Image (cartoon, rainbow, N blue to C red; front, side, top):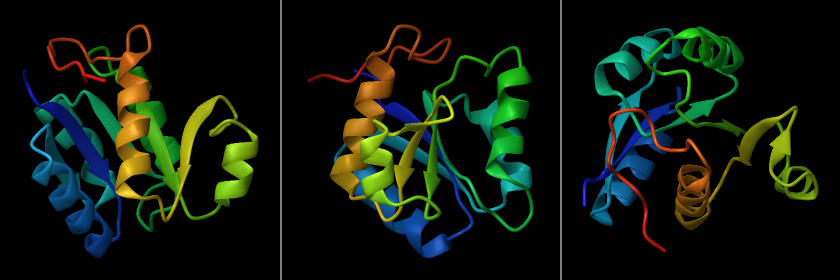
Length: 139
């Protein structure tokens, strides 16, 4: 089985290093990291991820702007995006089913297990695997 291609766009290098290592150690994920939100779209276009984990609040560009640009890209438009945010509590996101304003969210800090469950759930949805990918998570 092909590995699940994850693009992590977040401006916190310590968080991205830890998450990349934790996911890749499981052997099922290929993770690319971009700590500069402005470069996230270019990396997404080159890497063609199965899913994008995207920080909401970054110093150079807002995660919502990046998501809008990705949604406008003809190749990336159907790629699942999960926002990561420290601006919303875990209790709030759980109470709203981890969806706020129609967009999937995970409150930071999220455990690696929570992130993996979220990735698997998003990729199981109809149209959840990016075009050209054969990576499908197993239960």
